[in-house]
Picture (cartoon, rainbow, N blue to C red):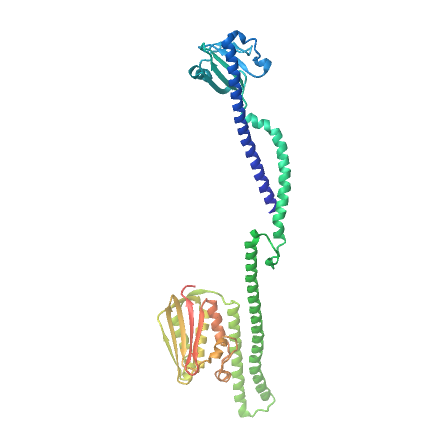
Length: 454
């Protein structure tokens, strides 16, 4: 940035200097030209008066010879443009000048002037002509300064001046950039308001401070989320250990009794049934844990396809008809052919767990209503039961792993406490939302809202 500031400042200074030199040259040229015009008029009037009084014979005796004075070239022209006298002794007197601009103007108006390139003198020449009383024309000429020549003549001092300007620009740009960057370099980005800066930096300081607040807020949220995840991980480990330990202890106890021959012959079959039930419980538990883990870690192959949600609900209800019949629970599926785009394995897990829970936590002779519909551009899946309901205080925690509202009832129906966790993570996988409404003794409604397009 310092280099850019220096370069910008130097180029600006150089540009200003060059423009100033050109403008100065133009002004000096105009002033010089006006002075030359006035000088020529004065000399021409003086010489004209001499010729009028003494005749043209006075010309050789005057000091207007260009070679001697290095100043004016004097030419006397007849009314027809012929050369009567030329102070440049080796000049061409045979050339007629009646077509010259200054000659024509002098004949017509009494005086005339022109600037043109003279091949004879190989340079631009300024001409001033004055008509005399006898009709002849007195003409004075001299090399004319041009802007180009004036600029060239100024180059030598300009180079010296430019060197001074360069040195001054370097010093000033270096000092200015240091002064400009010093408050920025000293700015403490972690606490930008603690140092005083010039007003121009105030918007930057305020922006950094606002971003710091936002960043600190995000970091706090991340830390809180990390602590929450860590706590959930510890709880999960403790819950898994407890859930695995209970059936394993039971299996180990029954097996030990049978091994040691303590069990009566008529009890062996019953103990084996207990072992089978507890082992089956372990299989279901491990299966739920693995499914939840795969959904969370997105290890399931994400093959998205169009799914007829209503037909999937009917197939799942048919699959769960046996446990529903045991509890005398009626399952009803309502809705048209509602299509969603998703991973069928995960959607099946969501539907299965919702209907399974509605059966398990229902009352004897209750009902489960599964409905699919479209609302506000989203596909809705709702599962309503007439079961025991969920207390309002427990609603915020029902999606936690292994959380059970009624542990005794869960043990009776064989729940693992992971069903709603699988529903929540499966819905999140598809960008869907889950809403639960429940009233104790009247039942529960779980609604999953899927985006129409994934």
